[in-house]
Amino acid sequence: MAIRAGDHVTLPIMAFEHAPAPSQFRVTLFVGPQVVNGRPFTYSCVFNVKKRSWKGGIQVDVAIAQSQIDRFRTDVDFSGWLARILTDLPDEDRPSYQERAQELFIQAVCWCKLDLALQSGVPQENQSLADDTWTAEVRDTVSSRANFIMSYVVSELDLAPRDAAAP
Image 1 (tube, rainbow, N blue to C red):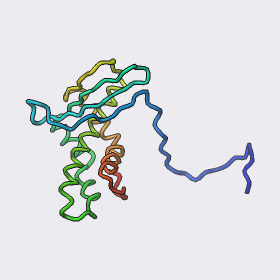
Image 2 (cartoon, rainbow, N blue to C red; image 1 turned 45 degrees about the vertical axis):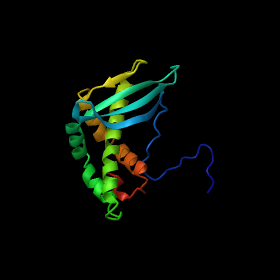
Image 3 (cartoon, one colour; image 1 turned 135 degrees about the horizontal axis):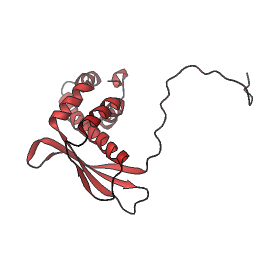
Image 4 (spheres, helix red, strand yellow; image 1 turned 120 degrees about the vertical axis):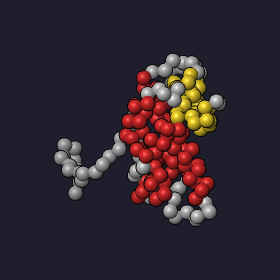
């Protein structure tokens, strides 16, 4: 059957994920997570941020407290999800993957927090986001972006996604 201009076509119902709108920022992870000096239960990731209209980029240091990380892990059942993802790995390989996955989780959470800052507008100057900045908003964002977080972890671990990819 040929479809002509003006024909009405009914498509099966499918869930579509739209590509994100092109960002005005280019963001790359510079370093992290690392323990914040003098604060053994706080981590930070430093991101390089370049806005299209800026002549140069900036660095944004994003801090997150261990208590927040623990709460976010629980909110998205990260431990259960990770256990399912790693079930097919040999026992001797799992500890290194688990450790790296925890680091990647912190990176993804910091990225979510950075995205909040970028959405609210940032000046073209190096800056830090303290661990107590936007606590509730970060928690909401992490919950709503759980699929992004899990996809980021799976991708960075170079594991094939399974049906356990959803939290």
